Length: 510
Ligand code: XMP
Image (cartoon, rainbow, N blue to C red):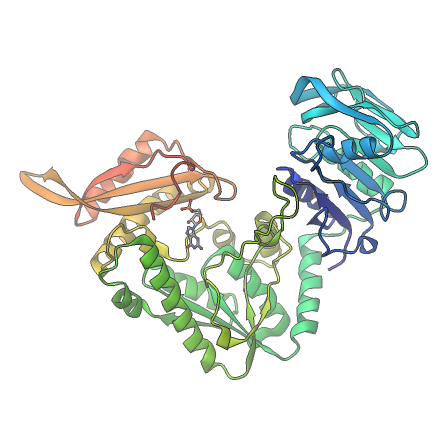
């Protein structure tokens, strides 16, 4: 992968947004904590310093050594990054008299500077800082101000070094993308060549080189990441990629058959393994959420491992890990935090498999995975699927799991999700599903008393699943869906809609 832009992270909540905006310009970039040892500055063509929750005046604030960067590579400091440069090179940073959050307008810009090409005075920018640059060092030139912030943008004379107090990466900075483009293209001279097609081309070439004639095994889940990873690897090594799609008996109605058919249609070398009976047998009598997860995870590994051992001489395990799972971030207490998540459905493979790991998507954000998938011709329906947890309906059936409960929930889920699709609501919801509660309630059907199960419908909006809010689905839709469920699914006589946000609730009930 060609290195282009290095983003040094000082812990801002917006750092990932800088990366996404740079990549929207078709320029590849990577994020590292400012004090990481995992990158070499000389590999890059430009550097961006992020914002930070710290004040440069605080004793424990990050103080990076910029000697290998400043004056040698085009450099842009954003918010904290700009304040750090001003503070470190002889200027003065102090607390702002007023809080400076939200909307501001550029009241002055140096019009003949390439940095502000196609940006007009008055352009809205977004501020989020409590310190301000009081004085610039003498060799800094003021190139932009807002009404409240005089030193809102500067450059260092004779260098391609810039600093801005506002955040070009947030969507509310109207010309933010133009400003980033001006810096990266006009000033740093970078080419905008990093497109989904070019990613596919380079990645396939790299995979060919790396994997040669080796055999690779991959667990398909029906989700976007594993499907796109499989398609890329398959393009590189064809039938030497062995995909395994396990039916744990906790998938959605007809999902195993439908998705397996789709995979075969796509030309993937895939084996469907129906292990539903084994999973249900092992889960029998277990009601504890963590207990269920552990059983599902363990049995998955056993089944996967059995299948992988049937393939002679396999040497790699492929995974659909994506960039947010591997970015190290700077914690609010300084220093890179050690939390590199390794959340995947496989839950870690047993040591004895001793496979090398290949993760072709580990530099991409989720929306980029979709774009890469689209550029390889993967069906939009597959790419637009809602996330679905590895343990499947197992963590949506509260209490113990039986084949009958799975059937009931599959029917309920199908009516709900198909209804969202039919009414054009599916794409405006991030995730939707149903839970089966372990309680019976009294109802009346015809003249008969019923004493049957209650189900919960849940639909949320979110961007990454970390926080979420319930979706305000139209009453008519809820009414229609409730009727269909109660009339159509034997054993259910009550439907409720979950109106809890995350936090404090979670998306799944277990
Ligand atoms: P929670 O319930 O923690 O869920 O708010 C956040 C997102 O993660 C999904 N989820 C999982 N995905 N394996 C997965 O692959 C799991 O064990 C798992 N648990 C929760 C959940 O569906 C939601 O999208």
